[in-house]
Each structure stands twice: as structure tokens, then as C-alpha cells.
Amino acid sequence: MATEPFNRFIIRVYALIFKDEYHLLLSDEFMLDTRMIKFPGGGIHFGEGPADCLKREALEEFGQEIEILSHYYTTDYFQKALFCDNAQLISIYYKVRFKEQIRFRISEAPFDFPEMVNGSQRFRWVDLRNSNSAGLTFPIDKIVFEKLQNEIV
Image 1 (cartoon, rainbow, N blue to C red):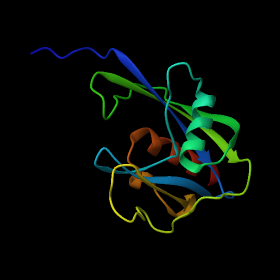
Image 2: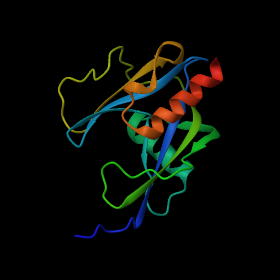
Image 3: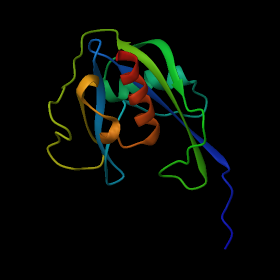
Image 4: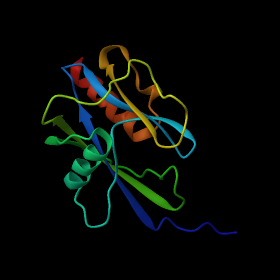
């Protein structure tokens, strides 16, 4: 049986949000019956640009507006999509900040959910100085995390 060729792209856009020089916001999620540690953000919709996607995702996830400060990284190699067959994943990362003080809950512990139900999500700060990328779920997120760590050393 022949395998089908890769024939589509999935584009995801993520926010890199710092509380200070060392503390970065991560999202703990339970989706597709899977625990995930990732950066806040999500999939681009047809007709959206990457910046518009990230602003929409911020409103959906945080209930707050963000300001995009700068582009940080775009996948520059082939990455097969984890949850979609025959798809190539391209991830785009922006440094952003909140337009107002944070109004959502920040957790201290990973996966601080009342129960593991699809759609559960919590946010927490991690210190780049004493964390490692191994806890992140997705390969591209790990690369970005390590790149950020290398910049502070």
C-alpha cells in the first residue's frame, strides 16, 4: 500500500509572553485526550494573517488583547504535523505583551485543572533559568524554548 504524499500545510501561530526578563508564559492544555504543555496560540483560519490569528487566539484564550512586539521565529525545516496525516506544520512565534494587566488566573502547578476534560486550559510562568524544554510537548516549541534560553545566558 502506497503512502499518500504530503499535500497540505497547517500553520500555527504562538505568543511568547514574558513577565520579566526570565519568566515565560506557558499553556497547560488537555486536548484530543492528550496532556500538552505549549505556548499560547493556535491555528490560523483561512483568510487570516498570522498577526490577526494571534490576536484572535489571545482573545479566545485569555479574554484579553495583546500587542505584537516582534516576529521571533518561523519553522525553517520540514516538520510533519503530529495530529494530521499528510500535512506539514509551519509554526510562527511572536513576542507579544498584554495591553492591560493580566485578568486571568495564573497557576503555580502544571495541569492545575479541576478535571482532565478536553478543552481544559491553564497558564503558568516558567523561569527560563531553571527549566528545560523537555517538558514541552511539541518539537518546534522545544527549539524556540532553547533559543530563548540561549539568549539569556
